[in-house]
Image (cartoon, rainbow, N blue to C red; front, side, top):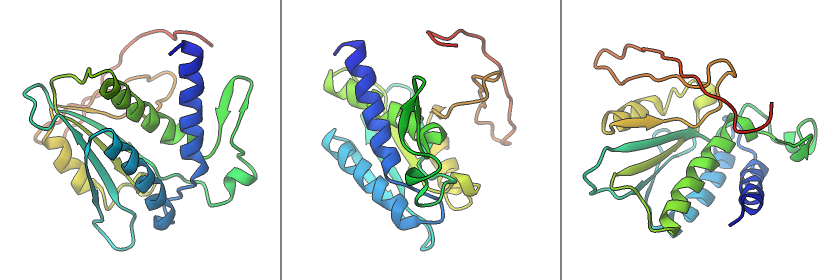
Length: 200
């Protein structure tokens, strides 16, 4: 696949997820997107699980690949809920490309990052090149409300892994923050330098 085709595929995938509006206070809408994602993960051969920890909240999606592998355990963690009410895509934040940027409800925070994580796993599966490590993709439905329901499950899942990656865009001057999982839950921010591959 050429870089142009890859870019088009990624844009189409993110836009498709953004088309399903998922405000935190609409659990049925959030579940609708998660059900769609689960079907795609099932087709990739992941062992999927849909957990509903509370009746007033959408579910939590887990997909496991290489569960018996001996390498470092990797958790890819994201959220699919947004702050945008139903109807946003038809009004103030239409899904569109403008000035070489993709716009739409949840495109940045954080369906774009979620889709990149999904695509990375899908590409490795398609190439038969999954690393010899257990990989778990975890998507939660309530981050924009403080993860009040999902937090205990996030912490429990994180404790079972050696590495937790959250593909959510950060502030431009704090591109990467590492927070080791310490027994006393202390946070230890670190900074990392780098440069853009292209663009401003």
